[in-house]
Length: 322
Image 1 (cartoon, helix red, strand yellow):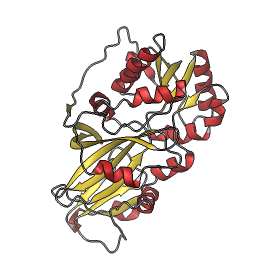
Image 2 (tube, one colour):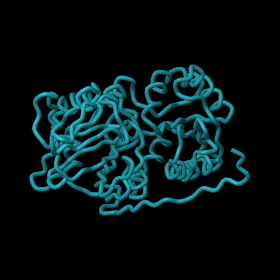
Image 3 (cartoon, one colour):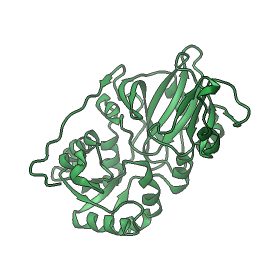
Image 4 (cartoon, one colour):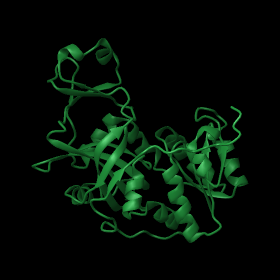
């Protein structure tokens, strides 16, 4: 009953969490990591073993991934980045025929999450407000600009004066001109949602984003507030959702108006705070996918007001000849 974290990169904490929980349930179980260049991926060096796989756009990717899993008795795949979700979802049955389960949402739901305009439509269909999108010839200032398929805050802009606008903003068809939600008025939350194999919401952990670096939370705080009952009301069931969903919401500081921003149907970089607060998503995934258990609702299982302050650490690889 071994597990694989794909595109492991810097996800050291995620690998360690799955190691801890797997060994409690399967003492001889191992957590492997895969990456296109595993020697340069820190998470691969803390895993119980690692191997390289082709790049995602390589036609051999799925076949080689499947063969590596069979060679290493891996029965469960946990994806770590957005770009691999679709290919794993589309090949889910092919992997299952080899005895390998990928914890990944349906292709249809992944498609919505990868397109910020589509996820806005999804939120609105669920009764959740979203930032208004403006035409590029008729918009107020300040305004927030971001690509509809972006990640890690790349190519995002807060525009407060017309002089800041460039031809790139108007000519790039991927850029959305959106209502600006002022951080003086709104708090930003990353919420880790857990959906069981029945696609029902089992847990919500809102993490207040106190500081962000390279699109990933650097300082965060667990908070029990109005977001939890709000999401239980509006997102109690999502067709095709399974495992951890990392979602962003803005909540007004005084009137509790909540805006949906985006959903990434995978573990986010700030998930270690949710895990260390007591919401044990790795354990639940192992119980569901390897032992066939049904996970009950567990909305009160985690610690409130837990502050996470992240820092850099080092992985040393001796004898590297790169």
